[in-house]
Length: 167
Image 1: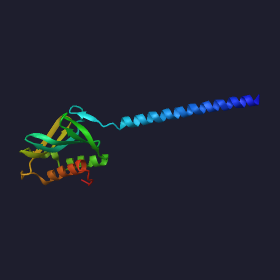
Image 2 (image 1 turned 120 degrees about the vertical axis):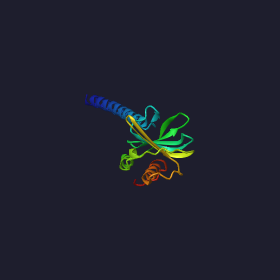
Image 3 (image 1 turned 90 degrees about the vertical axis):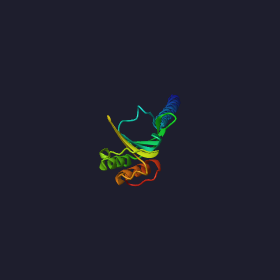
Image 4 (image 1 turned 45 degrees about the horizontal axis):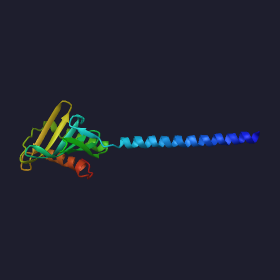
């Protein structure tokens, strides 16, 4: 009698063990699926990019040829000119993104009134909810404030070139 109960107990434990292994495997598979889903690269159309951002880059003959955007959450987007949309190319740490936005505020970007694009030019556009402020200049423009060129260089260094320096 005890032997039958012992065999029955062993059989039940073995089945529970298989059930627990299947459950563990299922949970791991769910976590792996969620992890992969969270790693997908965001794809933004012009209409879905968050309002608060800084766009910058180079242009020629009135059209951007190399365009980037940095969002407050640290995402750096590059323009996909064939689809007229932005794709994520890099992710900065929040502190780095915050430092760039603080630098923008400290140089009072909105106080500048500079729009002198030429055949080949550089630009910075500050976009916020309901406002857009664009600055454009060429290398030949002599009236470009040093703080503005410094900010443009910091944007390039922190986001595009991959070199890390404190702004």
